[in-house]
Image (cartoon, rainbow, N blue to C red; front, top):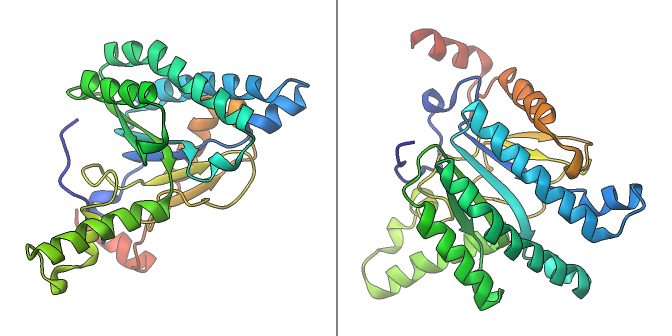
Length: 260
């Protein structure tokens, strides 16, 4: 996959039409509820959810998705019971140790977005090593959002622009939506075409607030550990049947497609 130019805040309809999304983002919800339904402790739900992650990565690669972004741990998840947070961190570290080499062999690039400073030195080192090892891989990019929040992302981008203004390298008049878009996370990747949320809730929960401005939203009642390859294909089929207008009318979109 060729590296992308920084994303624009105003998508070009010609480059975003097609039956297959280039970039899919997923809010993986329902691990705890899945465990309760099975009569199992919560950590078993997270373990089953990690297995689902691997299946979905494989299927997305098989379908030709260029980028897959997974909401693994939000900035609000620190409010959960300490025992659950500790288990999640241990599972995350184990997954890094056990899965990175496998993904590297399959030519998958791994990226992380979010504030890493709250994580242990071991986790931070593991994330950095995974990114370095897979940096030149080209089949697909898998982005893991950890300690991530959409409001945090916009704020850190605004802070970078403010620092440039204060330093005199940027004027206040140059602080535009395109300038901000170049400083949010994943600015070098295509904008997400499709957001999938599992578990039945219909909200985006502070995920990729800037990047999802024009994304198609797909909500599935399926709990994340049960969201398999077939479920992903159903979501992709639903996306393929939609008309993306980006503010235009349906007739205008049809006309533009006819001119191509």
